[in-house]
Length: 386
Image (cartoon, rainbow, N blue to C red; front, side, top):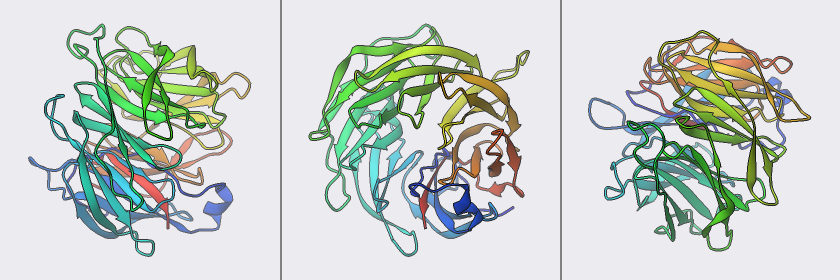
């Protein structure tokens, strides 16, 4: 194994290879991989780590020194690939705000140059996304349960938040759902609606998004409800733009929705377990992703320590369980699929490694590639074409 640095990270891989497919992987090439981490305390992490993935072999190698910043636990790339954005997951409540940092990407080396940082307007920011035009960063604040929108300047720097939305209410679990906990934010393909998975409310809230101002207005219907105590954590759209999949942390389930792009309304189709029947030890889900061809949905289980595989019915969008792959480590906090759809990378938070798997295009099954790459307590990875 190769050693990178002690950290707590979230593995999220975003791709910058439009139209790329398995043939691109067969032809070789590499992608830049950025790993977000937690810093401070007993962690020896310095911030964001820089790796490279070989598309011909699936091998990971170090590509450069880390970029220092405080607890960059989730990362997102600008649509043009020139800038990288990170939450700085600090603070713990609405009164103790975290931050959002901007970085320029060197086109030749992939090295990061810090640009600036702004307040996230809420505590423990844990997820962020850019709109399709790259004009705004949307950030979900877990502590206090809120969402903020920060304009992106022409040079990639961030302006102070111009939109802020505070969630209200609580869920069914008196321990974990005493109040709202926004955990994921994303936009639909038309860039018209922003969706927010709130673990504390058992809801995916829907907002009308103004691409000119970054404004958020509550939609009608206001939200899609999940089962009481489900704890929706992350979500992923199908490439057809008409289906949405939500992974529920507290009940270890995945819920499939149809999605109306004209109204922004999700409608529940089904809910399935992410763990095998009869599995009773404590387990929590984390990430969910759809392969670019839309044939398979994947979800991570922390405790069962696996990636759950689901086949997608192309006519209905419903899911069928297609097996599980152990992640070769403990507590897979996050994972993602490379731009070509050939590899899935799983970040095992408590065993300090990233495991690489080759995806079978016919069955969706995963096969380990080599030995896991050592990254102490990994949490988030994004990938950009190099």
